[in-house]
Image (tube, rainbow, N blue to C red; front, side, top):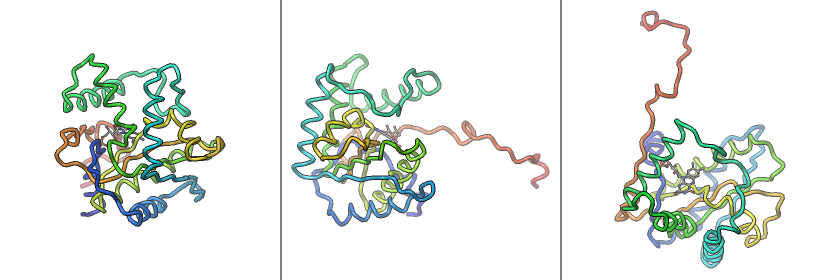
Amino acid sequence: MSVTDLMHARVSTRAFLPKPVPTATIRDLIAAAGAAPSGTNIQPWQVHVVTGTVRDQICAATRTAAVAPRERPEWIYDYYPKTWRDPYLARRRACGWGLYGLLGIQKGDREAGLAQELRNFDFFDAPVGLFLFLDRDLGRGSLLDCGMFLQNLMIAAVDQGLATCPQAAWVPFDALIRSILSIPDTQMLVCGMAIGHADPAAPVNRFRPGRLAVDEFTTWHDGQTSDSEQ
Ligand SMILES: Cc1cc2nc3c(=O)[nH]c(=O)nc-3n(C[C@H](O)[C@H](O)[C@H](O)COP(=O)(O)O)c2cc1C
């Protein structure tokens, strides 16, 4: 597949097979991710890969924390706006209902919604979990660098026949994850990610949220009339 085809083939996968992924393959994905550009090449990303019992320990601890609402920590950086408004609110809702529709979750069924949310904290059964951290004292621009790193990793994964799901859901559990992985509080969790083999039989993996057409978010300032181009 061309790189463009890989970009279109990448999807967020929310059901994985238990099939393990060789460490060498994960290393290759991280190397491809590390080829991402970063402002003045500071390469601010700090990667933690969790598998086996460490992965299981993090999943169990986070699930416990996630169902104890009063203990639920704050988001450490504002990935989402404090107040939602359209058109973003409508798009967000369409995404949520599309996903829930495939899973047969009815509007208002909070228990089923919570159960699906908690699936994040099993990495959707993926055998490999990845956490991306950043030194807290860096500028907001480093979040851009991290985004490029993560996208590179996800595209490289498709190239290897692997699937991923980027997971901001882990971010509020930054302190818990740092304590288990012995990461100092000078760093903050930017994003988690599930990596593995997609379960082709799982209905949730058929979810394909649509995209806007190019001209819905692009303004062309070419200074020419269409006639003068010809
Ligand atoms: C930074 C980031 C964080 C995300 N966090 C989550 C998450 O915590 N849980 C989840 O199920 N999906 C998460 N997603 C996936 C988005 O819902 C998904 O990218 C979007 O709906 C578009 O679908 P697609 O990735 O399949 O094209 C995240 C995506 C990004 C880019």
